[in-house]
Amino acid sequence: MFPEVAAWLAQRGAEGLTPDLRYSAVFSEQSLAPGTQELDELWEAGGWISWLGGPAVDPGPWPCNAEGRPLAHVATFHLGGVDALHVESRRAWPQEQLQEGLPTEGVLQIFHDLQTYGYELEDGQTRGWLVQWLPDPEQDSSRPPLVRPPEDVEVPREVCQPGLFMPGFTLPSSLEHGADQAHSFEHHEVLVEELAGSWQVQRGLEPTPGWAIPFTHVYGHSSSGSAVPLDEVLPEALPLDGGTNTGWCWRSSHGPRSTGGSGTPPAWRCGCAPRTWPSAASTTPGAWSAPTETAGPVRAASGRYPRDMRLPTGLFSAPLDRLRGSLLYTFSGDRSGQVPAWQLELAEGEDSGHFGPDSAVWTVHGGMSTIPAGIRALLVQALHPGALAGVAEHSDYRSDPFARLAGTIRWIFTVTYGSREQARQACDHVRRLHVPVRGEYTAGDGSRQRYSANDPGLSEWVHLAFTDAFLSSYEHFVGPVPAPPGTPEGVSGADAYVAEWAVAGELMGVQDPPRTRAALRQRLQDHDDARQLAGGARVQEVVGFLENPPLEANLKAGYRALFLAVVDSLPTRYRELTGLRGTPVPALTQVMGRLTLRVIGRALPRPGPAEQAARRRRERLAATAG
Image 1 (cartoon, one colour):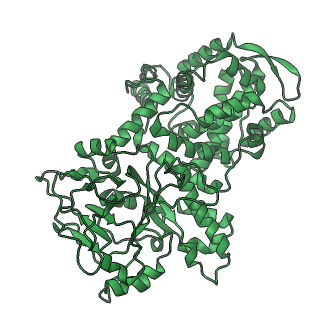
Image 2 (cartoon, helix red, strand yellow):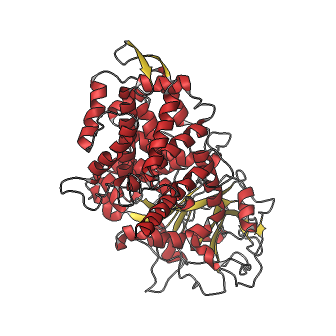
């Protein structure tokens, strides 16, 4: 991730900020609905998760300020989850841009009166905030309850939002812009707003031009500057030993998905720069509040928190199971969760297939980048009026999109992982379905043309769009395609993929499909030069459908992030024909797309069932031959 972020700063003419980047774990609602229902279900099932607002893990007597008014519960962070993500993701970051300091176990709970800012020394007298650390309880303890806030707690509105932490980064606040830096204060401020806006889109919020909602994160920079609290307020409020370091550990500034009556999302803005924290092995809870005295006694939590749930896959088992179910339904149209029979049948057959484990096709088709590749392929294929007419007039993609998607996935995976005979049968089946798909369309030059779905020209466009989409998406979201072993010198992994997948084109009736990256690009350009491509009302219908398909709620935020990244990756000409506008920050939508695919990758097993079946077939054939 760090190289991509550094490249974004370089593109924006702000290389000088690169040393000031800081890795952070960012809170995201992705795949989790607001409210207490999912939180209660996860808690009862023994799972750990983080959340904003709502109930708190039993804090003992509810914290109150100096006047006796109860504080609002702002957030509960599961530090084991943050640490597991931190350890996994920080390998790509320079050591000097990583931070430590928080415990690696237990929970951090934040309470605040939502009034006291905390920048003045006398603010401590209000006892307006409490930061509470609760350790993981002993294995034989009972789990503590979730406690709802008192009825008289003063909050603008009741909010509870579970979420997952995702790897991210922060920039220093524009308030800390140095006069000696090459870029201007205004430029710095724009970059900070672009970063906040990218997370806003990732969270599924509508963009707010000129103002972006800051995001909740652990570690990194404070969006309102840390110099005053760390260098001026904290030394006076909490005098520390000479060898003790302080640092900004977390910031919560999070607007919910829905806005209040005024149209402005309410947001919490709180931060913490802790002194020495209790060790993870300690059974004594730690609390940090105003320096006068602690906000009431705090007792240790008790309950069973399975140690094996500290790894990300365990931490998020319930939401990931729900995400997995939604994804499998989207891809197969079947809610049973069972592996489709046709995938298991790929273990049958008497040859090793057209491609193998070391092939470029297995590399490109075996990962999560196939998801945005499908979006891109549909957008580009729709630019040929003949191909689009066949879809619009002879399919029910609007009323039953998942059935059409399931059929396309079956063809792709059968050709990729099946035996040669299975691949041939799959292509013959599709070609038979195409026989009645005939009609007329208006070409890009305005002439009326007849079409047949099996026409070599239309088959070629579909093949070109598919090959370009899957290759480009792999490169955009993963990186360069590695060249398979034995590839001749001077032949890239991209060339190898185009050459290998030409087999699929030939099976579908394409005459002389391209076999190099350059040839693929030229053939795509030839169609445009021949005025065969066009936009128009039908294209806009497809674009509108792809912008907002009928997905389940927990998929929409992730899909939005992928769609924006795909649009930004399209050539300018294709964006013009589709009427889509790219964002001003394509490098950031690329990062958001990669993060989304990382979450999806946790939910879906790798290798997938089709690849596993192909490996079993190849092992059986190898054993027989041996």
